[in-house]
Image 1 (cartoon, each protein chain N blue to C red):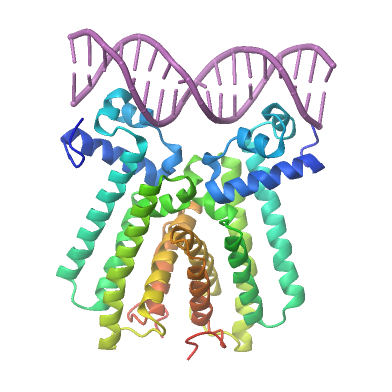
Image 2: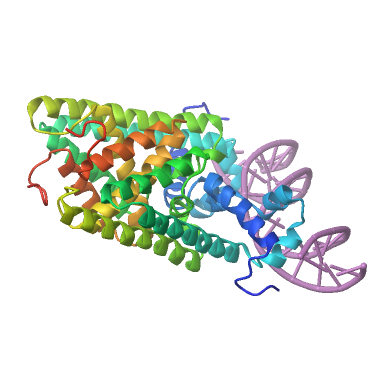
Length: 200
Length: 200
DNA sequence: GTCTATAGGTGGATAGAC
DNA sequence: GTCTATCCACCTATAGAC
C-alpha cells in the first residue's frame, strides 16, 4: 500500500479520470470499472492506489480544492481591482462548464446524503474556503467603492457561489453554456461591478 | 399492465416513496428494493406498476411538475402583488428544504448526464415552466413599479431559479436551512422587493 | 505495481403461479 | 395485483501469483 498522500504518475492519472467522471456523472454513477477501462488497467490495480471508493473520493476533493485555491491565489497575484478578481472568479466556473463539466463539489453536494462522512466534511470545507476568499474580495471592493452591495459580505459571497452552482446545473440541462455567462454577468452587476450589460 | 396514466392507490404510494428518495439521494442512489422495503411489497410488484426505472422517473417528474404548477396557480389566486407572489414562490423552496428534501428537478439536473432522454426533456420542461411563470410575475411587477430590476425579465427569472436551486444544495451541505432563507431574501431584495432585510 | 480469479452483494428486470 | 424464484449484469473489494 502506498503512503496516504502519494501522488505517483498512475495515481494522479486515476484521479484525473475519476474527477472527470464525477464532474460529469456524479459520485454514484461511476465505477472502478469505468476508470480501469479508460486507463487500460484492472480494477484490482485501482484498489492498490485507492483502497476504497470513499478514500478515492476524499483525495479527489482534496486535490480539487488545492488546485482551486491555487487558481484563487493566481487571481490575487494578477488582478488588483476587486471587480477584476470577481470576473476572474466567475471565469473559473465558465471554463469548467465549457469543458462539459460541472463543479466537482457542486455535484457532490447533490450526492451529499449518500456520501461517507469524511467526504461530506471535505465538500463543506471547499465551499467555506470559497466563501472566505470571496468575503475578502468583497470587503476590499466595498471599502474602495468599487463595489456596491447591501448586507454582510458573507451573504453576498454565499449567494454568488450558490447562484453559480445552480446556474451551471441549469445551463447544462438546457445545453446552453451561455446561460451561465449571463447569470454570472447579472450577479456581478448586482454587486456593483460596472462595464457589464445593463450596468445602468 | 395498467394504462400508462393510471394513478391507483398503490402506484401513487410508489411515486410518493420514489419522490422522497430522489429528492434526498438522487436518481442513481435509490433502487426498486428501497421502495419495496418501504411499502412492504416485492420488487416484482413494482415492475407491474412501473415496467422500468426510466418510466417511473418520467411519471415522477410529470407528477412533480403538475403539483408545482398547481402551487403556482394557487399563488396567482391568492396573491395580487408581484412581491407577494415572489415571496410565496421562494416559500415553496424553503418548505421543501425544511422537509429535508431537495427540489426533485434540481437533483435530476445533477444526474442529468445519466438520465434517459425522456427524463431529460421532462426536467427541462419543468424549469421552462418555472421561468415562464416568473417572467409573467416579473413583467407585471416591473410595470407596476413594484419591482426594480435591469435587463430582460427572463434573465432575472433564470437567475432566481438557479440561485434557489444552488442555495438549497449548499444549505443542506452545511446543515443549515437558514442559508436558503437568507439567499432568498437577498434575491428578492435584488429584484426590488421592499420590506426585507437591507432593503435600503 | 499489475495481474488473474473470485467472492459476496446488489442492480434492474422477467416468467409464471396464485 | 402480488407473489416466489430466478437471470444476468454490474458493483466494490480481496487473495495471491508474478
